[in-house]
Length: 269
Image (cartoon, rainbow, N blue to C red; front, side, top):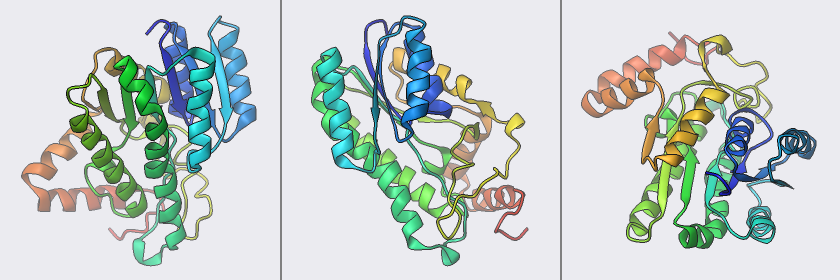
């Protein structure tokens, strides 16, 4: 990955921040995008102290013009794009019949449309470089999770989009990777939306039992280097995918019972 130009959305915290660190450590030129400019600047300064080449763009992936401008910055500063990592994400937790529909719109705008916008403008450069297009998905993009309707819908949509692009560009050298971490110790759950669109606040899960953002980033880095197709990163996740294929009704019950054990779960045990 030395001297490769890597674009990372949602780079100010969690998995995105860890991805910036690992790619920069291996000599990549990184372009970082997130809404929180101050955090981006702090990260950029840290990376530059280690002699990394870094460009920062403060913007929102839900805004098409921001996604276009980020790609234009990468081309202007570094001459092209070798890797695009669509990492920016938003989550939620609420039963659908209690949910304000603006919550689902927000999730689709960030998780799905953010991926579409960034990919639209980066794709010509990725085809030139025969580079890598990466989407950070979730088991929620392979198995619908109760109380996560907006999140699952957006990740299913993103995976369908990525899969189609992989097939469309099968003979053009484009590498497409869909990465599915397990529950990860990152900011996405703390920033998850409640039924009225307000922030959930504290995560209902035990952070110490989750994958670290650094572990997730290391696996994604290796997946890009090895040009992997799919990464399901936990045994629990692989089991969920396997059971859903072979025993879907049983899988529904297992998932329901598992999610109902969360603290303050809206599901009834």
